[in-house]
Image (cartoon, rainbow, N blue to C red; front, side, top):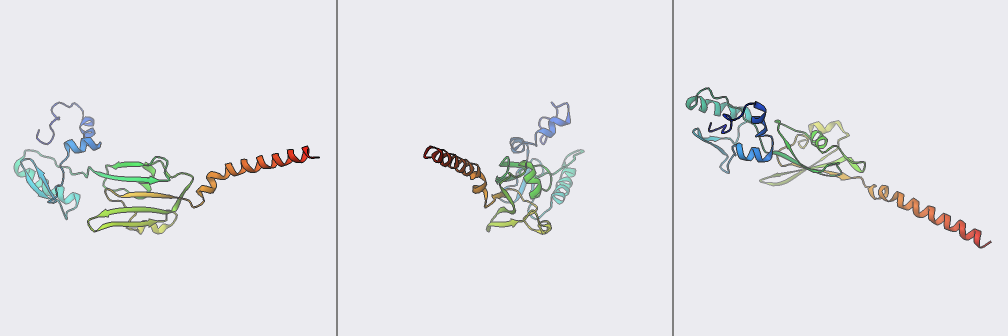
Length: 195
């Protein structure tokens, strides 16, 4: 009941799953890795998280839980894996990922793909770290993208889909054609009147 405070009131597992699939649920029911890089769990104490994979942390917690709790089943998930997709995409915004990994193509799909004015040859991934920001330029038309360090995203990455350099020409082409057609009609009318 310490780890699942609502489990005795819930009748289906879907409601339990829902607690962790929103930012507020993850904040309320999840356990945060502190600045000391430890998880502080009730009854189990501190568990070192830095330097371990998700499955390794799961095994460490399971071992501690077996010593203290009866029939404990430990499942570790990264709950705050969010990425921000901006620029020439149909639905820019912050997107949350609840699986263990996500790549640039999946993040763009979450934003409903790129607009007609996007250039997919020059997609930027900005990754923050303690050493500063690191930038990756990705060409989504190249097969080399899969070997790029920026292809698989990390929490809090920003993806920026840049506009095509001819975007302004494309946007203004209707205005230009309207001006040209108006001018040609005006010249034809003036030519007819001045005869």
